[in-house]
Length: 395
Image (cartoon, rainbow, N blue to C red; front, side, top):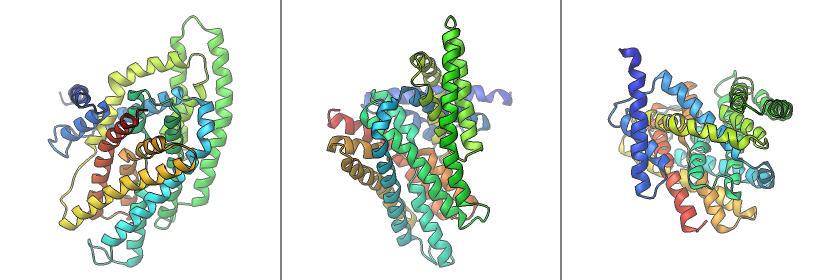
């Protein structure tokens, strides 16, 4: 009977995410907030009804890959080109501001002799690493919210998407630099060359695949369902290769696959087929799984205060850093606020980065609690703030 427990898990996740999604919609909040809350309530953080299993982890990974693939399909390459320079500047400030802000807060609370710390050199690395964690952006949360509001293909949506993808790349570089000081096996030069190779290979493979895809679709028009399968295979291969061979996040590979196919005349058809599967199964599991990851440890008063300040800094540094840089790139005040808010969510990305640091000694157990709180708070408030930003500005 135990082998069939995954069926009950799926039923609970799908029912609870839809139920809480409808509740949050009643309060004029994005339904993705309800899905996140459902995972949080069902998981070990509160009622401990569900726990992450290998099945849920794998299915949620497919869910976020499909989510980013459909985001790529919906994107307009010409619009992305227009916002390319702005996206880079926004992403750069979206890394620098949180990095400095996180380091300053950590420096105040995390010093030799505090929180079980020892040497000043290891403490300095830990404090810098806290800043690196805050540079993360969970684009999947923002993508789902923008799709729900019908704003994904807007100028602001393209700027946020572009900035979030670049933010991930810059985050990888920052993570590599800091981990290389604690792990001799990490080589920054190799990592940078891999990232460069990823974009070169993506351009070449994308050009060739698009030509092949066009020939196949022109020849076999009578059964378009096979085009969906071919597109999904390409998406999965891009996601796999980006992560395994280049060290770039699999969601970036999936997004690039969608972007490559976005100019196909069958892009809309493919998108519609994927959105059904995503809505019915994959997206609810992915967003619920974020909540299932959360385990809130016991914390002292000092750590609670540190957590509160870290949350404030996490939100403000993204809003101010990305907002001001967007303003400098000729976006108006309303759009700048929307872009800044759209970069707030840390989601599962920050958890992955924190876990990586913990595995090589850059994250003490006492500091893991505040990071979890930052993840939970920013993940839940980001879609709420984003919807408010669009609503209050009338965009």
